[in-house]
Length: 418
Ligand code: SF4
Image 1: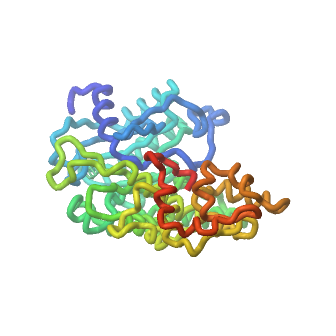
Image 2: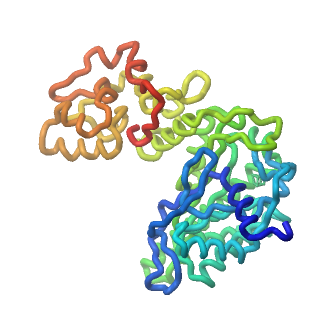
Image 3: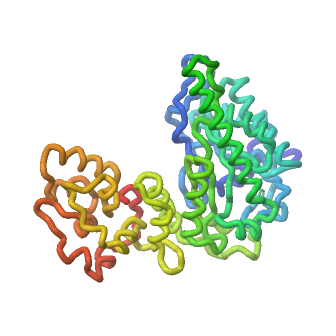
């Protein structure tokens, strides 16, 4: 490490961070520095580039504090036994980089993670110090996402939440068996405890906020964009049903804002226990769609699991909402002019916005098929599952070849039309 320039370190530590997908700057409070004479904003536009291995663009300076690590997680390029170039920033260097990039309008914030050096507490202290320097000494108002180190002292996690917009603790793999064989030093109970400490702190701040309403002191700030996590998909044998079940428990138990699914990316110098090929990217996409079904469409985890095939995985050729509808055809067709919101949300091809528009429009008039067609990208997908004043699908809903008729002819991503 000695003798590396800051740019050489940046090259190593930005590259090392690209395997983590658990960052996004949505959901935080709006701030800018006009009034504070500080610097930064969570709202501004910027040329902000950080790339995941599959090419997705993430608009944060996304780096590791260090890629030295005492752990040896098999799926990780930074594991202790990996033969990669190593580097380490000190907190002041990260601060300088963040401010320089911000002032040049390259980024809108910082995503900072780290390999584990010396101990979990020491590593967490270093991460917190970066955020503290940015917020307290430079009055930085941009977005900060800090990785929390599982097993670190809850007092450090509480401090991290004062400075960061979002905290995230990666669960890494969907099953405890997977974690035991691929990341033996990571203990599920320790990860849960760290997530619980974030959750508890969030709840305390919420209580304090309620107290404020009855005249007590204003509550401290704590990770206003909440906590998130990442699960690696396709490194172990976990099925989509396992992953959906795990995500649902995480949402319920820790009130996570987001679970990120990251298709396993083969890494250089990989452990022999890992698959040689990455899973199809569409699998990651289907999991994101299933996540939306649970969060915005009212599906229970067990219902999403019903959409899986005999091997426990979601179909790749059609989205999970269509897969569910094809399995439960007796729930259709629904009458667009009478159905409840919950029933309409189950119709393949009708998104949340379209359903709201239907509910608003039908207060004034009776809807025809053309009215629905104007609200959706594909009326072909919708028609077998609805009836309107001028349309009934009759035998269409029960046709044996309906799946073939509705499956996209070429692979396409239609997340928001679920
Ligand atoms: S703890 Fe595991 S996943 Fe994290 S940097 Fe170290 S080896 Fe990689």
